[in-house]
Structures are given as structure tokens and as C-alpha cells.
Image (cartoon, rainbow, N blue to C red; front, side):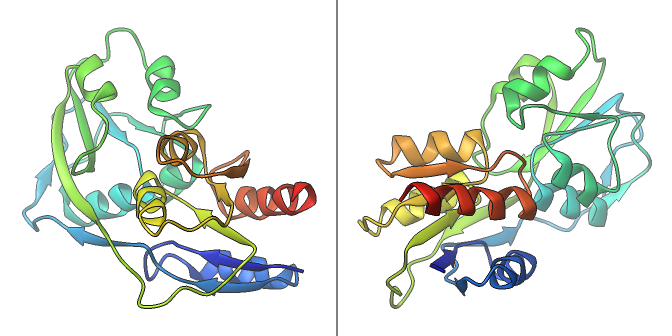
Length: 211
């Protein structure tokens, strides 16, 4: 089997490492980004017709801070919906474009909850209020372990990996990460069909079969 590096932030890697190891891979955690939460003040969501979430990290952080109950929730993918505790609309494909297409033409009052520096497509198109919940901080590992494949689960991780100027090919969690990886000059051998652990493990199988 292969040596696979998982680059997810600390605390978010366990399930993927376990799944890869159950397949016989030598799975190693080398975080390339860290999550910094921004603020602790309560966020009132009760007056919004729609709450729009584009990451599991944002969904978890909003659950921690929110007051009230939103009328409807839209999530960029199943993992984000699950992290929040469910959603009325889940995008397919798991992109901002996919989520925008799934939203009603006149959604009413919308709150977009996400990361510092998140793409502006959804909040601009929906004329949404924006609350910034967290930022991703690039990390430079003290050493790099030679490996066969690198798993990227965010555009931030793709950019951090590109900054290391390494040639090991990658697997991406979804279209937005693949786009960021391509823009950074990385080789993506496979993209997960679903943005979750099962999708990433299956993409690793496909990547190794073609490498």
C-alpha cells in the first residue's frame, strides 16, 4: 500500500487517518493549516429567512455561538449539513455555484456565515449579511515525510502545500479545492466524488491506481 499524508487541521484528522489505515495505508498527519476562531459574541439568527454555510468548521462554530433558530439552512455539502445538525438545502455539486443554483430566486433575508477571505459569490449574489467566524492560518511543517500522495481538504491547504515546492501528487476533497490546487500549480490525480471521508478514501484508491 501507500504512504499518504493528511494535511487537515489538528483535531480534524482522526476519522480520515483511521479509514486510510483500515485500507492498509501508512497514513501520516502533517497539518498545513490551523483554525483560529474570530470572536465569541452571540450571533442572533432568528430574523433570517436563510442561513448559508460553506464549511463544516463554520457550521460548528456558528452552532456554538448562535442564538435563535433560522427559518431555513443551506449547506455546501453533506459534511457541512451534518456538522450543523441538518439543512433544508444541500448543494450538488458542493460548490458555491451549486449552492446558489439550489437556492430560491428570492430568498429573503440571508446570513452568510463563513471564513475570513471566503469567496464572495454567494453573499454578493444573495445580498446577504456576512458574519466571519474563523480564519485559516498556513503552517510550515518542521520536516516533511516522503510520501506517495498528499490529501488536500481545502483551498488553504492547497496553497500551503504549494508553498513547500514539493512534487508529490495530490487528492482533492472537491471542486473548489481542485481549482485552488490547479491555480497553485499542483498535480491533482483524483477528486473526491463526495466531500467526506468515504469520498476521500475512494479518491485515494483511484489516484493510486493511475499513478
